[in-house]
Amino acid sequence: MGLQSKHKVDAAFSMSSMTDIIFLLLIFFMLTSSFITPSGLPVNLPSSETSDIVMQEITVTVTKDLKFSVNDRVVSRDQIKSELTALLQNQKGQVVLHIDKEVPVEFLVEIGGIAAGLEANVSIATKPYK
Image (tube, rainbow, N blue to C red; front, side):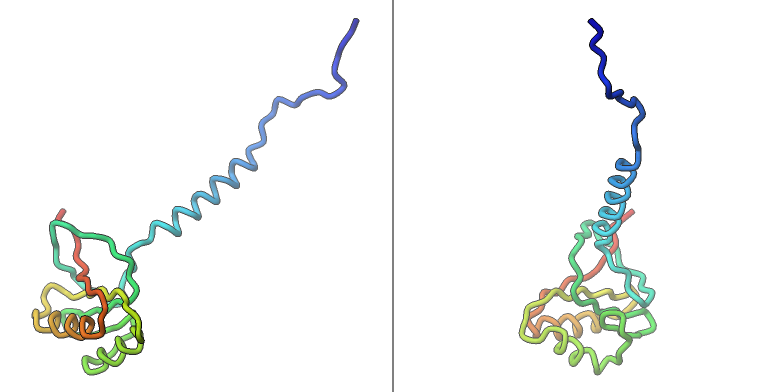
């Protein structure tokens, strides 16, 4: 009694579906791992023991030569309040201050006060100790 199957099973393994899955995972991790948004102006951030990652909705950058930008758009010191007011229209938002460590503290206090006056949550961007 010869019971043989008419359908032969091929022992070869197709890797095409595996490469598709790996490619999709690679794209997923590349998109979700970019929590820190680099600012347009070069800033040497101060160091701190704890450096939390915060989702950045609005960034205000001040360089050591006192160039100001809001969300990578260069503005003058007088325009910061109007820019933040336009971005925070009747809503609470997160404002992250990227201020160079050589900038006098008065600029940090001024910009932080403007953002706090507009009922925004204010954070200062730092880099961790190495």
